[in-house]
Structure formats: structure tokens, C-alpha cells
Length: 135
Image (cartoon, rainbow, N blue to C red; front, side, top):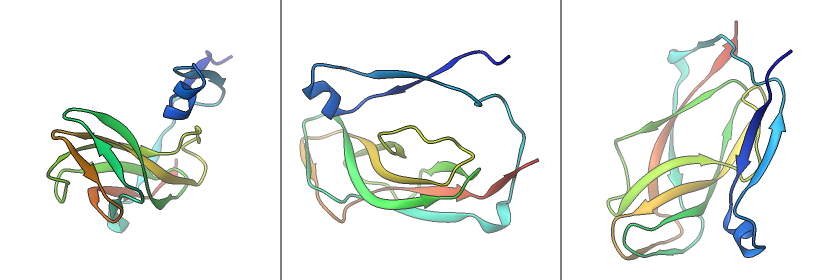
């Protein structure tokens, strides 16, 4: 029997309904071994798809141009080719997807160091997508 693991989903839409997060149990997230294929790594720019205004040190979820992530692939953040006004923290979706499924990232969490707006087409950062398979 595996222990229960809970996925926490947060979004500004939930806050608008008076809910700060959703907590849902998921099964099948036990430890697994995978083999990474470093010979076929993709470096992918994370590009804003909408205008988002920021105050200094404010964090928002920003819509991005979709990024396809194959099943089992691992995503690493690149610290080269970033946005000078702030930091990209993660990419993903507002609904949980398992690592053994194909995924599509269409949002990113971004924090601005200054009062400014991210505009459509702005580079937020870059990620490395490393293909993998279960061993």
C-alpha cells in the first residue's frame, strides 16, 4: 500500500472565489528510476503570451506560449538567457499532470524585481527539456 500524496493547486482564479488553494490526493507517485538522455536535450525559450503588470517584488502566474513536454522528460531551468526585470520560478499548468504522461506547460510563475509589465513576446527565461524513459 502506498501512502497518500496530496497535490496543491493554486491560481488567481481560485482566490477570486474565496479559495486560496485546492488539495487533492493522487496515487502512483512513488519513487521511480528513469534514464535521462543527455544527447537529445532541447533548450526552449519561455515566452510571455499576455501582458501582466507587476509591482516591485510581486509574483504572478503568467500565460506563456505552450511548451510540449514528453512523458518522463525532466525540465531544468537555465540561468542563461533570462528576463532582466525578474526571475522565472517554474512552468506548468494549473491542473496537475503526472510525470509519466505527456504534458503541456502554458503558464509560468514569474517574480519582478521592479515595477513594470511583462509584454506578449517577452522572454521570461529558458528551460532545458531532457528526455527520459523509465528503467
